[in-house]
Each structure stands twice: as structure tokens, then as C-alpha cells.
Length: 240
View: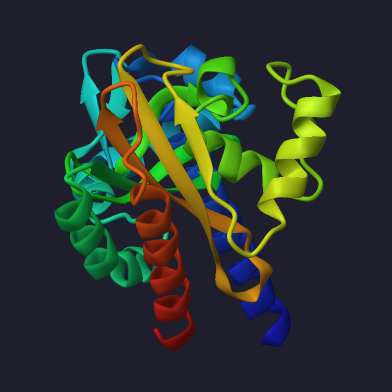
């Protein structure tokens, strides 16, 4: 009996893994894809891919339009409730509202998810992935938030946008307890940004707390306010 049960569990796990392979492949084709494309993307036989797709269609996880497939309503509904870091979002809600009120700046809390930057909390806009933006790209790595997220990682290789001396100085600065990065129109003319790291618990890295302001100058009080908000978020994470 135990041998049969183990075999059934293995088959069930194999089907589940295959289904997620198909869903992951579909996520790369927002306009839909045909069976052959998905079979190649999943690296699964065409017959297996077809069987999994049709099962997922019945569940509402995939939708079929003629000979093409795309993500279905069930996955879209589940995706609406996805959060990159729920604890961080809860801990940052109060501090970023206070920071926005005191500074009149637009505030965002971001983290690295692999090589992508995700917004966990913000005073404007909807949290989510910044579309088609890689953290190491020159435009992102030069922002105050990008500097905080990248240079705070001890094993991160130097982005191409930095010289070895610049990268070494930035990393040294971010090791200080009162580390704040101020960017003066380095990426967008007429936009300045101040960012500070908020260490995540259990050595998970840091989040960036950043304040964007329109203008060519940064109010003298803003770096201190951003630093205080980052500290409040870190302390909030410790008790959540």
C-alpha cells in the first residue's frame, strides 16, 4: 500500500509541477501563445503540454481563443491579491503616510525581487512590479532608490553605470548607520530623490524608502525625515 501511495504522490507532484511550468510559460506571452510555442517554452512534449493546458482551461486558470492560450480569470484574480512582501507593506503604511504629509513628496518603498524592482508601498499609484525595468539598468541603478537596493547587497557586482571608485564609495556610505542617498536630477531633469535603506529581518536584505520631489533642490530636512521613516519601518518589521 505504501508503495502505491508513494507512486500516486509522485505522479500528482509531477502533474502539479507541469501545470506550473505551463502557467509560467504563459506569463511570458501576455498576448497569448499557441501550443507549439508553449511546448518549446515549457520544454515539455506537445501532447503533455496540450493535456495540461486543457485541464487548466477547465479550471479557469487558462483561457483558449481558437488555437491560442492565455492566462485565465482565475489566475488574474489570484494575482490581484499578490503582494511581494506583505509584512513590509503593513509596517510601511503608517511611516510613509507621515513622511508624505511632512515632506509633501511622493513616497515609495521598494525591494529587489531577483533582478527586478518591486514597489511594496507608495503614496501614489498601485504597488506592483515596475514594468520592463531591470535593477542593473543604468537608468535605475543611478536613482537614489536603485543605489540603496543594489549597493546594500554585499555580493552584488558593480553595475556598468559605475566606476570602481564610485561603487566602492557608495557601498562604504551605505554601511553607515545614518546612510542616506541624495540624487540631484541625475536621472530625470527637474526631479530629485532621497532614499534610505530599511533593513529587512533575518538578513533578507534591505528595502529602499525614497522620496521624490519636483525641483532642482532638496529641502534640508528631507534626508532626516526619510531616514526616520526607514527606521520606523525596520522597527515595525521586528514586531509584526
